[in-house]
Amino acid sequence: MAGKNRTGIVVNIVLILVAIVYGYFLLKVTLFRGASYGLIANFETTGVRAVNFDPFIGFGKENPFTADVVKGHIKSEIYANLILLIPLGILFQTINRGRRAFLKSVAWVCLTSFFIELLQYIFALGIMDIDDLILNTAGGMIGAAIFVVMEKLSSYQTAKSIVAGAGLFMSVLIILMFFIGVKLPF
Image (spheres, rainbow, N blue to C red):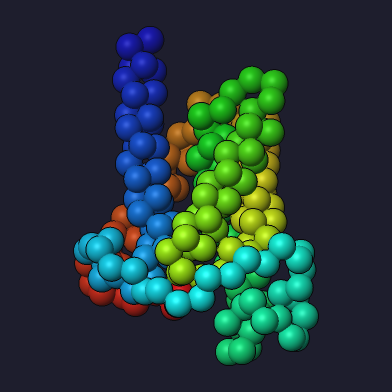
């Protein structure tokens, strides 16, 4: 029994470390695009402070709110916003238990996405866009659903251990990218 308890503690510590690395990566990608890898010291302000409450306007050709449309990268922006918060949905699902765990996880992802969008608006780092909020929340929902399926196929502890192992692997890759200076495309 003591071995299982020790394993659970190690898994929880790994998940905390993974959450820290992922949180840094998420902030780096969404808020601190212009900062050097070692520091989160300087903002790359776009000088644009706008809000788009018109859902799915960004999917058209004439979107005044999305700079990426001008570059022809709208599909990559959609995929990035969807994929970016899948890990957050998984992480929230590992800590939320009980009857409404899935709804709590999705709500926390939605709040996190809203907070990031709000900070982008406040600091003129981009557009506060309802599409981003919708896609980020959908990504978090996918992540939470992935964990639920993993839990159904095995057990809560096994699913949590798999997430910790995969998260540790991805965290090491992210840290190595920062140390060798790989420039992220976003």
